[in-house]
Image (cartoon, helix red, strand yellow):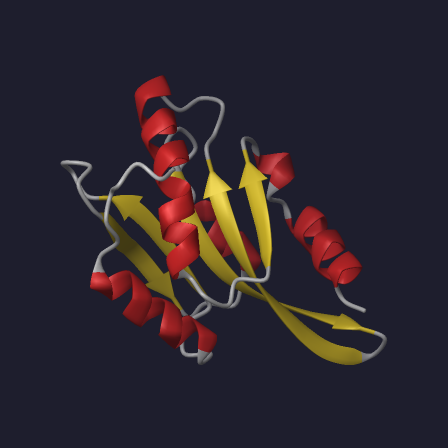
Length: 137
């Protein structure tokens, strides 16, 4: 069961923009009182390394990323949902993020793949590319 932390209406609006290819990625966070899931940042930058720089080293976040790649010479894309919970994050925020994850994930209709990252190797480009390639028939 989800923690009951509601999702801001802006989350859904921004996600629709991402699905419509107006955005490349969205970073989500909890508001300062942990009472609502909010959009922390949106970006149109197509550089995956820039996205990774927006994931804090010691704090949890969720994100969606429209990952573009080629398979068999054809352009493809997959929308990834990231649960970023680094090993270095404090325990209480990790627990709140973990218990709120499913509620957020259910509101993001159109996500195709999920990544749970606890360190940089789990979210590096090659890992995401491999997962996208293997999910495409």
